[in-house]
Structure formats: C-alpha cells, structure tokens
Length: 176
Image 1 (cartoon, helix red, strand yellow):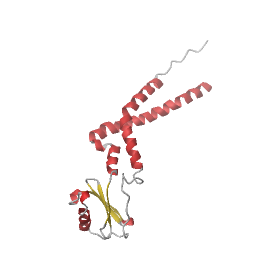
Image 2 (tube, rainbow, N blue to C red):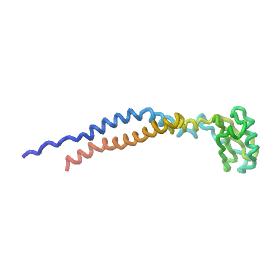
Image 3 (spheres, one colour):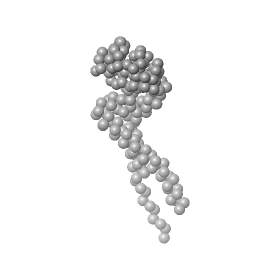
Image 4 (cartoon, rainbow, N blue to C red):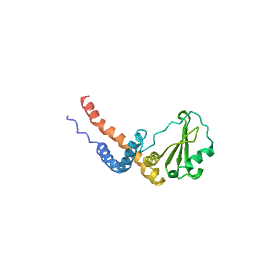
C-alpha cells in the first residue's frame, strides 16, 4: 500500500513571512546603528570624528584643578566658564596630557605639567555614540524603538539561520 503524502508544515512559510516583516520593522533603526557604527569604528583614524591625542611634555601630572579650569577658560570656542560647563576630564598620565571636554562637545587638550593648550577641537564621537545607542532620540525612542529592533534583529538572525539550514535538513532526511 502506498504511503500517504505528508502534510506540509506551515512553519517555514510563517517563518519567511515573519522574517520579511521583521526586516521591514527593524530596517530604519538598524540603518542608524550600522551607519553610526561605521563612524565609531573609524573614530581613531578620522580626526573629524575624534580629535587625535597630542602628547604632553612629561609623564607627570603637575598642574592643579585651578590651573586646569583657568587654561580651559582661556579657550573661547569651548565655552567653559566654570566646572559646571565641563562634561568630563580624561587624564592620560602616560601621554603627559589631559582632555577637558565641555558640555558643548569641544575638547581642550592640556599639557599635564605646564597647562599649555595642546589642541582645541570639536569632538563628534560622543554625539555619534548617542545616535548609535538611541539615546540621542530620547529615552522613549531608545526603549521602544532601538531595544525592540535589537530583539527583532536577533529573531531575524535565528530565523535566517533556520531558513538557511532547512533545505540542508530536508536533503539529509530524504537521503536517509
């Protein structure tokens, strides 16, 4: 007696449909993450994104807090008038320098022993990082657009691997 035909599973068809819908839903957030990620990968190679680090004269931190803020105040472009205008300080003892980053994204690099201004440039890497993680668009966008897009992307990866494996599994089953 001939064997009855097997009922075709709806899983692959549903998987392909969900895969296409997921790709559409996550396309724009994924484009933002990929494009900003490319800039971040090149930040050390492209001074437009992140200013190159200028070495100081010695590997010693010999300036005071007052000298740091005074040197930064002397740079009009940075817009630093007090410590409240400073976003962060990045001290590099091995390079004999420190970076004063203003809230307006200007970076002032100072010699750590003389307080001489080594460089003053606009720093875009922090802005690009905030675009990359979605925080630039606000917490609701970060939580309700970028985070779900990440889960959808993980689902796309899983379903894509399944769709790629499926023909191989079917051929193996037919041979057995």
